[in-house]
Image (cartoon, rainbow, N blue to C red; front, top):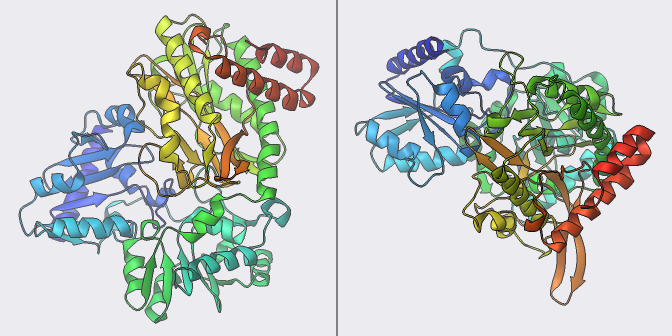
Length: 593
């Protein structure tokens, strides 16, 4: 891999010289600012060898760096080893920013290249201003990978499907109407959407263009007089096109999106500059007034309707049945020496695939044994998979895509002997999960205001984790969705009734072990008082939590009562769907402590 990366960096640098560029920035995003992208746009992975979903590579004529967040520190260090690319641990106080690093590397009057077709507009505008202060130009005109990546995959051509109304709960026409009504509150008369999961939600379509994410490559324009879905025509069967036409939607070619803005003039366009490419932003702004706000369609999508909520609840039962059968298999197979990390991935997929409405996994299963569990997004392969022994922890983070919902669950499982440190860390993580699960908070509360609940018990012992505590989850859509979150960094989006969010605190001891416990939760109104509405969480995930590592003396009476009540719910909802042997096993695993 070292030689491959070196050759690719030199190819890129050769291209840069022909364009008089002293640096080039390669983000992880595609033309739709996606977190997970079609292979066609995996340029950062291709040039650097780093396979994580988040990170930015910066290449100058004499050096190279990669910035990524705490989820990937260990993985990036391993994958970049032997190359010239320097790892910069993003968001840490002492880490130099990309802007500062570029200023230190480049002469005054230098030129920094980006592909404006994939670089998020908001980031490009900020970087352009910052570099301009040092008389360094940001040049957004080039896609070097169209030239240097000779076997670059083509854009996917798989056809889209319609998600029926009985699963979606609302028609595209109604969703479009609501999005336009929200935009009009800002004085806009049109909406532009480039994010793939939001487009899939708006039009009740699903695709397979991105691994694990049931989305299709497209853009969308909404106005009172015209609604256009820009998508490759080969992807839309006649029946789907007819269905969309009945909802007032016109189909246009995917590559016609840019041309559309050479003619559209005088509109007030509601968009989110963090959610579309720099090139598209400039094309829209050239002849129209831009109303740059947090995506109105994203906000609508994040609040699930009653049909979607019912779907999530059904899915959790089926997913829970698969998880119980997996845990039973693991309990027998691990002591016999039959378990590898990769075998865990295969078994989970097999058991989920037997469930009704299963479509696929919602992400690549994270199955880390011992030290590998300290790598937040560790992905075992058949070749590198570690064998599990009858001791220590196995961390399993997995999920499924079903027609009626998406799941994401993590359990840390004791396979045998544990140290006192392991038991304490496991219990601190569980206490954090329970504390957040029990939260009651007023309407308008932001995720950053309650994130501390998941960390308090750890902080009191000088322990912390560097990733967020919770992310939104789509309804048969991306397992990571916004705009809401639960994390220390400020996010202006308040939690609303109907939002689904994960709860996943963790502790990671580098090169030793990792612990994480994750449930999905539904935000619900729990009371109305003279002080307004108050919200809390309904735990959606149905899967037993391993109680063998719990240090009971560290648990409060309230925490123990919550855990026992949760396990009672898990048993009551799953046992009718299990065989007698399975139900008996679950009863034992969910008994009160």
